[in-house]
Each structure stands twice: as structure tokens, then as C-alpha cells.
Length: 151
Ligand code: DQA
Image 1 (cartoon, rainbow, N blue to C red):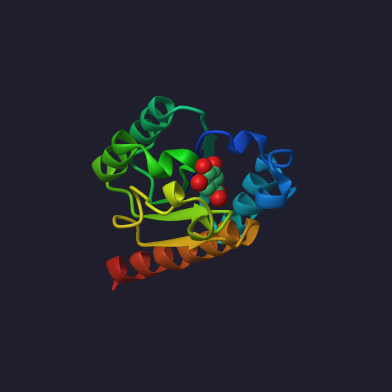
Image 2 (image 1 turned 60 degrees about the vertical axis):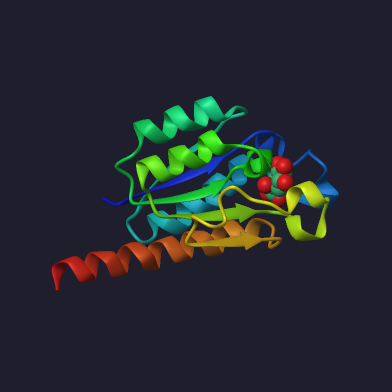
């Protein structure tokens, strides 16, 4: 069964109570369930993980390097972490970058991402819907790859 990784970075474990005017009221658990359900409907497995440091995220990526696709919200590490970028490049899993908030409408330091130039694409400012749309994209991507390899 194909596998999609859902990886969330620092402070996203606080979703639901963290700055709800910016990030909404949905919890990370609820997001993980929504994404998992969406993927399972297409017979794709979802492995979810959240960590508050890039070291833990990097180790988890290394352990799951055989996965088919990655949905990544690096949180604040988006703007700072060369080592997480290198890990994503190192495992070579195709990925989408997701941000609940529109980082381009916010502080200047959030405008630069260490991931956007290596991602297939980015979903920014769409709230929880960004995760769902990203999951739907992953389904299409995996299905297209599967039909290409059997034709
Ligand atoms: C975020 C945006 C980041 O700038 C911020 O540090 C986060 C969340 C988002 O989902 O909007 O932690 O990635």
C-alpha cells in the first residue's frame, strides 16, 4: 500500500488553542484524522508525526524514507532550518509545503521559506483546507505514478 507522510513542526501540537485568530480552532489530531480518512479512501496509508525540534523531524524522515509522498508544515522551521531542508532533499520524497496562515501577509521574516523552491508546490493561507487539498493532490500524484509504471 502506498504511504503518505504528514509531518508537522514546532508548536503545531498546540493547534486549537494557539493563536486561534491566525491558525483556527481545529486541533492537530483532527487535521491528522481528516487527512488520514481522505487518503485511506483511496487505499493510501498515512503516517503522521509532529515534533518541536528539527532533529526529531529529521530522524523520523530518515526512518520513513521509503514513503511515496510528504505533506509538510515545518512551522517556524520553514524560515530557519537548512538541516531540515537537507533532510527533505536527502530522502528525496516528493512533497508539498503547507501553511495554515498566509505567511506572505505576515511579518517579513515569514516571507522566506527554505522549502518552497524544492517543493512541488505550496498551499498557503487556506487553513485546514490546505491540508485536505494537499492530500487530494498526493492521491492524484501517486495514482498517476502507479499508472505510468504499469503502462
Ligand atoms: C505556519 C507559519 C509559520 O510562520 C509559523 O511559524 C508556524 C505555522 C502556518 O502553518 O501558518 O508555526 O507554518
